[in-house]
Length: 338
Length: 281
Image (cartoon, rainbow over all chains, first blue to last red; front, side, top):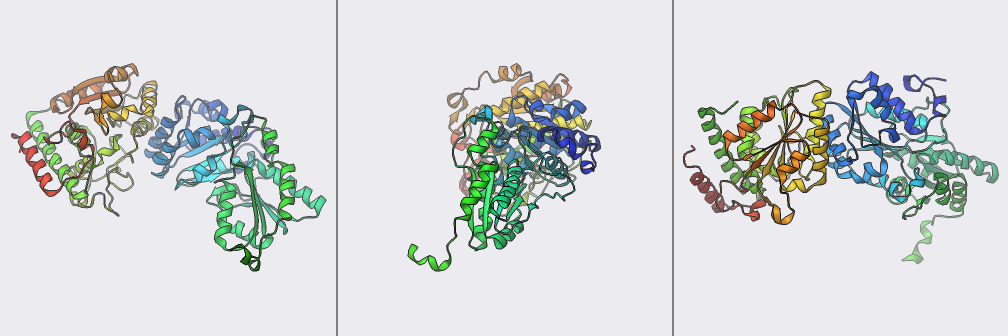
């Protein structure tokens, strides 16, 4: 098996590591190659694993204490003088506690700051609502200049972290907290920011997912194919912004049924981004977005929360079956509605 | 270095011209944060004309010193200072605040030459300045980083996050100026949100703190000299100033935090400046 992007470890290692652990390792490797990389955290160096970089390069790592606003301002200042800051904290804090600093200092000035936000969605389930990040995609997506990536597993996290160094300007990568099942058997699948990955071809319905949900989407598609004889296309929309319009329009034309699944509020995240493309296309389509239905999430283990919100394998099977029974109206049926 | 008599005369002349230019730009622009721009003129002139290692013709020179206007609403004052220092043509400020202009109320670092950071939202500039100061350490550069804060701005929690971190990392290359003009939008600072004892607060956060008359250039130079030789951590120079300094009907009047001037008021303001500085050409 080939090493990931030329680094000194392989995709097999991804089986043993969380997304965050992978990130810490990759960043440490990148730090050797690029002396401009600096790391910042707000007393979450250990939890986010940016501390791995800090151990290797103490003179290039700054722990700013529990003070996220200042951390983003400092990141902007470091980028202003030509350094390449990586900032890590929990997604709930990166996207909300300090969002105006991210928006005004980093994004408005279009600075080369990379935010690797961990504990995204409900992945820190047992910590409760204060630590669930179900609005981050929506908030970050609305800020100009920044690109937003939600990798599906540790392999994709490694590729996304490497890819974000190659693009100029702010990038926000949202990863999970816990061990995410590996989706990819290889890193040679052509990861590219802004380019969705078709995990499975299909003609009856398209499932679009991001993050840890992608694994379940593939599993669910296999079950639906086996048990129901349905041909399910699965798209890993790892980049929420810029969204891959082409992949959505292709799915729309070829399957006419689309369901999105995300570990996020159904307002403003992946489902919204996909629905915007569909609405602007002018084509009719059966569509549902599945995620957290605009409510605060309860405590619980991540797998229980994913089950509750129907973004695990069982939930995806159920929701796709529902959508298949749902027909979009043809134009001739509209008259009675006015 | 202490001011020579000649230097003092020259800097006072520049400061007087800048005050009048601020009045003009306020008139052209339809309105500006004139009060807090006038209060910071004297120490800004001392910094830009005497202390900062800069080359206005090469604004992105890597080895320059950097100044971040954390009180970003002082944009009109900063723009006038930068124009007079030679960063761009003063005539450009005739379009201040207008659509398509590179210059407006809160300056955009991507558009306004010489502006190191886009500020305007309170409590952001100090953290960016701290990032630059830490960056100098990583890159092994001897840059000085200056941050100019408003007093009302010190209500922001983020200022104290930065204050704590600057002391933690002992950034001796970071020198703050606090424009202590005692006024904010809604009134005197001590009635809106008490700041005193503000010097003790900065001291308690580990900053080498001096309190001076922010309109006395001799005291300003003396304080900067001391801050530059202080190696134990960041410095804060609290400049006791008068909001609207130089224009009699604006001084100490919070109503002139932001305001517009018609042609007649602008003339009156400039006459007042002449009267306030009769010995300065």
